[in-house]
Image (cartoon, rainbow, N blue to C red; front, side, top):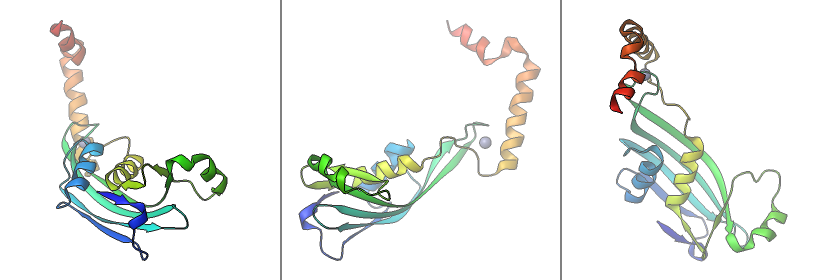
Length: 168
Ligand SMILES: [Zn+2]
């Protein structure tokens, strides 16, 4: 969804996020590499002084993922609650002078318009945990142990490395 900065209404533009919002689903899919099974949240887009745009984004997504430990199919939940500031790209140098210590999350928009899909994608990418593990830790531990047991029982000849060697 493209928002023309000059046309943002004064109290702000409220954009609901949900599974019925195609561009939001696509943005989540791009970051989580899986279509979301749950998605809800909201963007509040406000034009501050000048061409500065302030965005408050809250979003909660769930998407299927594979556990990095036991390999079981699990779910990944990402919650974002963030304030972002966007400035026109060409004014980069000028903007730097205006920035205070609190302005940690600055983004840039081009051609007088903001792509909300980019906003959602960038925010999700920042919050994405580097590791995915099962929600049921006990079950995950048991499955991981079983995998390790199996690997040690089969010995080195049956290891993943042996399988890889056979491919050559
Ligand atoms: Zn697991």
